[in-house]
Amino acid sequence: NAGVTQTPKFQVLKTGQSMTLQCAQDMNHNSMYWYRQDPGMGLRLIYYSASEGTTDKGEVPNGYNVSRLNKREFSLRLESAAPSQTSVYFCASSEWQGVTRSGEQYFGPGTRLTVT
Amino acid sequence: KNEVEQSPQNLTAQEGEFITINCSYSVGISALHWLQQHPGGGIVSLFMLSSGKKKHGRLIATINIQEKHSSLHITASHPRDSAVYICAAHLGYGGSQGNLIFGKGTKLSVKP
Image 1 (cartoon, chains in turn orange, yellow):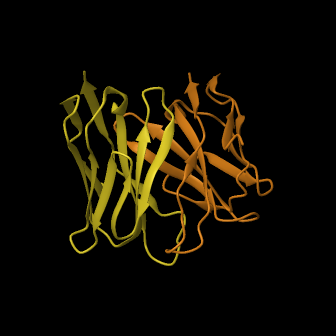
Image 2: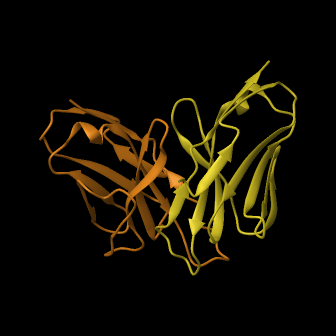
């Protein structure tokens, strides 16, 4: 049981390049999330997918697109990378079935992205 | 203004001490999470609670809904507890799944 996996672990891009961060979970969770973590800012939600076939914007969606390919996989795409997107990116998944059910989030190991 | 505030920002303790980390939030929530981020960067969920108290080993989390406040306690602290502890509030009611707001974290260092 691998939990939540992310690829790649590290990436360096030049301004204007594009790339896709991959995320997969094997816990059969409905919900998946993409966060970025910057020094002094805390984690911020970029996009989330409540269930297969749906995606919604979070707090900082500009410059990103997502695809919920199937129940397992949720990818994050940077179409034209900018230095402001230098950050550590975390994917997470959870099972959320209302207030009385567990919605603990399980995080991937993170992707450290540098845009020069 | 961040809707989720943690205190202290940094905390240094001696091994064996009882530790308390506080989290206050300014809006209505449906649940509150406590997370641990290891020095290597990995993030682990410790607790999710919407009322009362939860305990796991030496860790205890409490929440007071009326006062909009939660605490994470570590009993008999150990150097391996050194990490950043993050509080996150799940905003709204009825399972609005995207509204998770994070505090900036408390960096804990436990000295032997």
